[in-house]
Amino acid sequence: MEKSYYKNYFVLEKMHWLFRIRRKIFLYFVGKYTKPNAKIFDFGCGSGYLVGELQKMGYDTYGLDFEKYAIDYGLNQGINNLKLATGEKIDYPDETFNIVTAFDVLEHIENEKPIIKELVRILKPGGKMIISVPAYMWLWGVQDDISHHFRRYTAGSLVNVFKNLPELKVIRKTYFNTFLFPPIAVVRLFSKWFNIKNRNSDFDIKTGFLDVIFYHVFNLEHHFLKFIDFPFGVSILLVLEKNADNI
Image 1 (cartoon, one colour):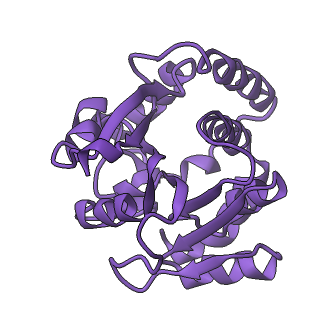
Image 2: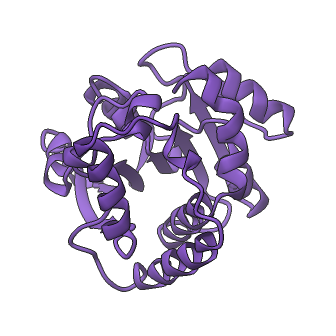
């Protein structure tokens, strides 16, 4: 991510309607697939805001990120157990964590497979890995550029990343941010077709009173996600289980 964007991002991840509902979605899935006092690892944690929320909920949670500025910010906010990544090796013993998460991280890594193998290594048998990524290369836009993404995925291409890891099985696969997909797609495609580059980030677009509507629409979807899988959306969520029988 562009260094100049970090200061704004730290505010956005706490306050913006999109991040608030995404966080509710992620917290729901973590809670669904684990028990109280579980040990959780959040890879690509940024400033650790989600780590801090999970710690408040009683989970023994740890975070790792490649950006020193983000980790320092989180530590200064009083969030514990944050570490700076220094390479592809994750400095925790085998089978340490009940839950491993990587929310909007894999798209930042040119070759994600070595990191995924590390995440599998530190996950306990029977543990869950919860992944989210942005969907569809044709939705590529300003936000992907500023965030230094290498790719966007389809559900199929994301599952394909894990095909040579027989110890993992997919237990949930769904797109999300589906209800707001049409307006988001229109903005992205319109900007691309007409080469509109009048903003540094998608969050520079001022939607005013529509923010309240967007919040409630996305929040409604959050409740539907508890029961159904969506066939398309702006993002993808994948849950995998480490099967001890295949190790």
